[in-house]
Image: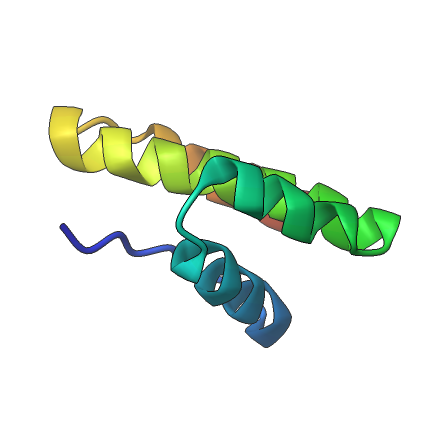
Length: 75
């Protein structure tokens, strides 16, 4: 399954790519802990967006798109 997140910055896309390549959640958490506070918050938001995008694919809800729009409004 291919997850698509739209409207991300290049940095956010890079963070997603890095996290996606890490094999375990523990590894992802270790990676996040090395980042500055703002990037840590971005990573946690991106993880939630990935989860919602997955749910969106499975259950055909619009939750992921709503979260993306809310995040865009706060940036």
